[in-house]
Image (cartoon, rainbow, N blue to C red; front, top):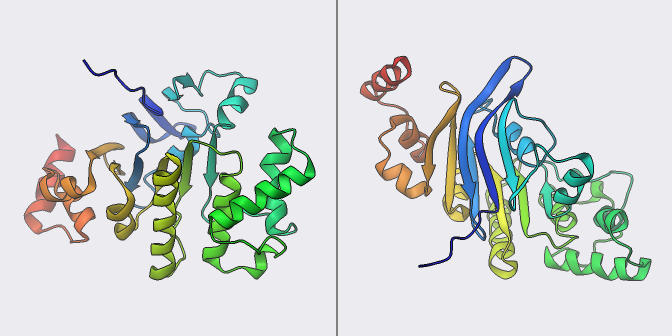
Length: 266
């Protein structure tokens, strides 16, 4: 009998929101080691908010989130910091500090969490910049980089501590199709060459079908997961017309709209 592999991330009976406002409820899913997992849904459904709960920035209203078997919800501040050291996060704009060079930005996690010497940090920074095809750009300021280059610099910083778990919040936002495709290939390189487990919040269909092994689709109306599985399978076989329409970029047909209304009322 094959040994059961522990998921990298486990989300159990999770309800999230702000104050009394519930964004999503009763969320249950896991993320397997080495997969690219997408979090999808319409605008305002809580995709980025869910990501911020998973990485420990927000406290849920109910439920639990476990990273490599350890609860980030019930962890003490010290325990939470230890859990957070094991993953890297890239945000929509790259989230680089504008007053620091690219190299100084990438060096921050190494200075914060390791006892490496300045020379060791400099070598590590250049290694990570070369990994994202930014070798030689360490002395540049973020304002001197294109949008795609800033995204890659953010990824270099996220990779600084060699995490096995990476989170991306709308990585393709604001990028042209060619640059977006380059970033998709880079994300897959992180998975294939380093065995990283990757969670991506996105609404870009091309990226979804290129990089995601599985996706969780959040429904703004029902405030829970509408579908969970491989994107192509959900597009072709889901019984939910909204899921099929979302993944095929087709509008709902009149009979499907009626079907969706019935499901919501029920």
